[in-house]
Image (tube, rainbow, N blue to C red; front, side):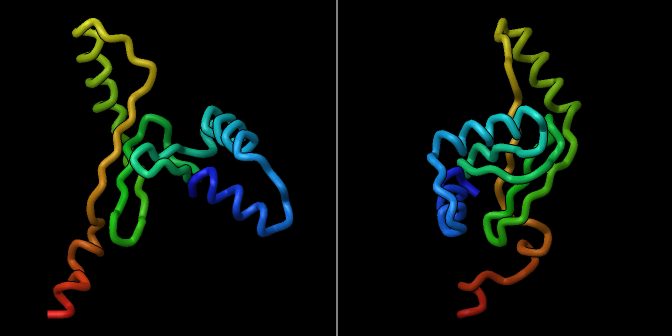
Length: 111
């Protein structure tokens, strides 16, 4: 969900919340590891290991969080070797999950 999706959901429940309040709360939840930001979607999701990758299925919306600490560490080392100081590593891959990649698309079903 995006922050504005949350604002709309809360409004539908009778709660009036400003977007800034939602962003502050999401920021706090992200720092505590309860919520992850999905950069490519400008959205947030519950859970997921910090430092892990996000695999996002563009068809069904499924999310997976594989541990890729070794990859993040290698990227940080490479950045340091180039004189770049990193604050975080974001690894997101978008595509199709196993189930969706083996299922025919709507276009293929039409033909």
